Length: 115
Ligand code: SF4
Ligand code: SF4
Image 1 (cartoon, rainbow, N blue to C red):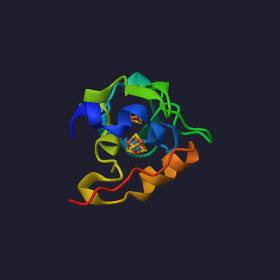
Image 2: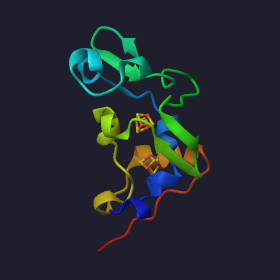
Image 3: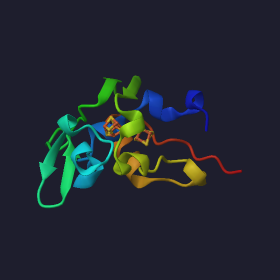
């Protein structure tokens, strides 16, 4: 999928809906890539992105306006949770978490294209 046709760049709902947690060693102090200062510890084994351990989550690394235009400040260094998050329509499959986050922001579920 080309960046230009990627609906995530005009969405970002999942970065403002879930607690984004991951194994602590993905952060810099464990030899990983995620900037330590943008995380908070979730003892004993996890960390999460700052801003997401909240009743109204929004990842500190999310730039822009959800549902309009967004980008991730640490895209190449983002945690595995973000890398592995499924976008509805990938592999012609619906992803409930993607749909749920979009629905929270009043965005329609992505259309599923069948080959
Ligand atoms: S909710 Fe779905 S479409 Fe929106 S940014 Fe996340 S994966 Fe992309
Ligand atoms: S690190 Fe980037 S991709 Fe992951 S939740 Fe934050 S803004 Fe979204």
